[in-house]
Image 1 (tube, rainbow, N blue to C red):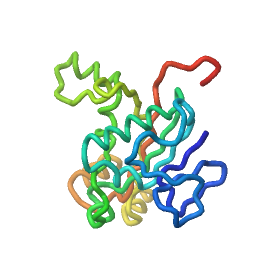
Image 2: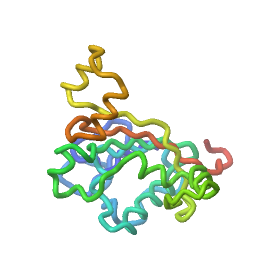
Image 3: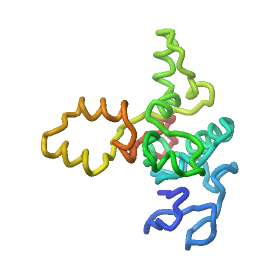
Image 4: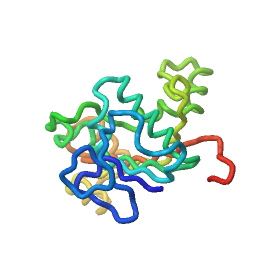
Amino acid sequence: MRVNLGCGNKILPGWVNLDKHNIYAVDLIHDLEKFPYPFPDNSCREILMNHVLEHLGSDVNVFNGVIRELYRISAHNARLYINVPHPRHDNFLSDPTHVRPITPDLLRLYDQSLNKEWEKSNVANTPLGLILDVDFTLESTHFVLEDEYQNKVEQGLLLDDEVWALISERNNIAREVQITLRAKKVPVMGGN
């Protein structure tokens, strides 16, 4: 199953489209801060959250509950596509419903392999993957730049190192972060 969580008006054919509000022709109505989600364990092979995760879990226990539910419904090797506004962009800063910045480093906290490496190296990162018994690997990260900067990259006027420096020093360079996670589970017999 492929699920489009918090879809709003972005209804995707071939996906189960779920939203909290019933103002669009969605397949399911459900509040993503309420558990459990209306899907069986290990049933989703792809999960899309397009500009959704930054709206969830102002309380850390609720946010971790969201992560647990995403893991519960994910099949082994399921892909989670998470698109969020970059936390240093006005699109993130100006919306009062954005309750949490979502970064690749935040999502790495739910990777048990990294948790174990940090433990061995005495790194102080919180091992949320081990604590919550979830296991997501960050597969890819893509920063969508504002047109002005993207054009400079395409023209060879800005190198990757320079883009990274700008993103870390200034606001409104990257407008979106696109993150792909993979759920690591013990494969279910006859499953993935």
